[in-house]
Image (tube, rainbow, N blue to C red):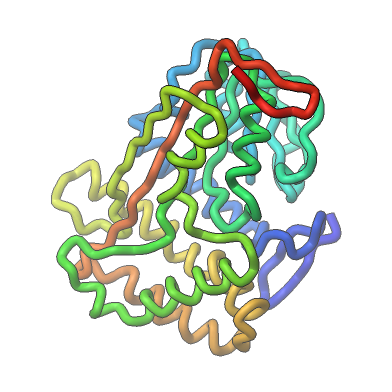
Length: 298
């Protein structure tokens, strides 16, 4: 609970500095809004993997815990554990949901799971392939993993991103800082291959174009864009302030100016901005087992 206060934002205290996105109320509201966007993209569902009454579920990087709580309400047969660096989740939850302060990149101990859920971890993990191998080793045979990530790069449907130079500058700087910090944002594009390499089979990738503001004529996608632009306006601060000031050594004032320009350009529907969202899920082989060294084998 000994959080870091910096430039008007609050950051996690456990393993201080390991993650550069805030955990304050503003960010918690954004995370809950982001959950709503995912739910709309999934047509009201909480996941895409073909799970069947999983007894034990792990939500890695649970954030506010909203996904874990919704999943617990929908699956009374499941016991859901949500882990995060920040203890920002509610204390009053249903008996089948619990939250733990933990680092997913530490050694995994305890019982195995039937379903492991990971979402929006880009920029938070040093070694994603290693994390996926740990997940595979701690799933029961036949269990599923599911990962969902946005490409951290905004594109234009009508090729007009040259009219948004500050968004371009923000994206380049954000990726540069993340790479320098050792926790890359370039995750979504590699998820499928990493999940396969970790030992999963029947790996499926679903890629969706998500409008960054309400420019589409299609009513459903326009609504999604209306929510997504609110998410992005806050993300311009959450994803960047610490990256630029701590890693790239900008002054807070310099970043505030860039952030204001980015927010203005994000609202420009004439750009027709969008990001690609990847959902990847796969199944641990039913005949697999774990050696004493913890390596999955056939």
